[in-house]
Image 1 (cartoon, rainbow over the protein chains, first blue to last red):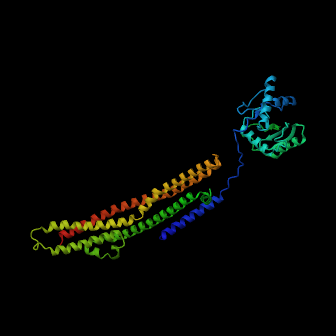
Image 2: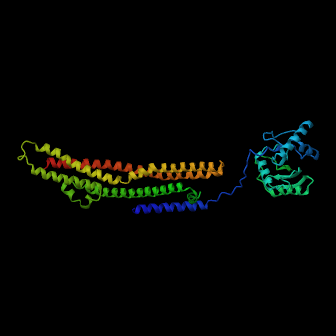
Image 3: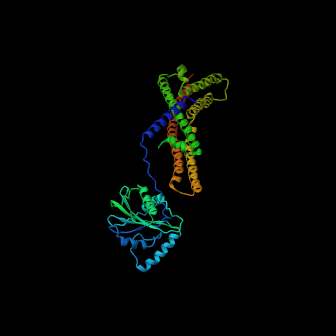
Length: 206
Length: 233
């Protein structure tokens, strides 16, 4: 060790100090909320290209439609009445097997398709976390539909019960689940509309 | 990027490697500073010596250059050459032609005059060795640092894959920290190796050019002393 080693060590310490100060002065990267998206387990939500929200009759028809399969095409039109009954039976069987019990129907403001399944997965996950089904595991089949809108920033508003299940407590839990979600990630930038209309069907499942 | 946080949050292996690299870095910069100092000193002394040397035409005058014969490589080479010259001159007087009738005194002296060159060459080699000292260490840092950094990288990547196996998930949040740790050691390795390589090349070139200058000086002095030894009485 000679004086040059000390000088060199001093220069290094100086350099590191400068780097340290410089790195502290740099603005920290804002924390980004991370939404975990699991593509595989959730079924593809049903996406409709209807300009205006459907009337009550249509909603009833929609209810009878099958629960979408994993590889179901996003755009699906109503099927004949005979097949509907069969599909309804099938869907009941599926529900009893314990598949996810939230079923969304998505409408866009302009009638264009909402093809961002990852966003719907986030939406469903968040609401599903907030929903405590009071009849979980019980042999009771209830069905209620909650309507709400999501604006560009992901804020949920205009939450209302669209179709009652007949059980007040059950209805309350569904509205509460949506209300608690409060804020979702902003709508995809590529999505041109100002808001997204969601008709969310809550089903009890065994 | 906070360098200390990166250091503290990395694995033990990466920390050891980074500490070693820091030592290498300090060491190589110390060598650089020392060599810079040595070379500037040698250059200054040599310049002073040469400016005096040009005005001394006779060998006897050369002996009277005092401290200039000791404080720089040129002076030391000259001193050794002159000392050898004096020894040969004494020997020349002792082996007078009448004592040794078979051999021609001129040819013997011509052969022996080579001793002057050899003495100066020996001094030159030791002077260059002195200037080259620590350069092998610098060369070692140049070679070892990137490999050490690479070792840290491989280790970090290995850890990242182990994490994937243990947690059963290849999510970016599991893989990214390991890879980040891994890459930082390579960065440090290169940060040590690149300056060290530049220093090494600078000093290697300087030593080589200085060696050539000394060779030229040796030839000049040798020609002068040899002439004096063979043709002057």
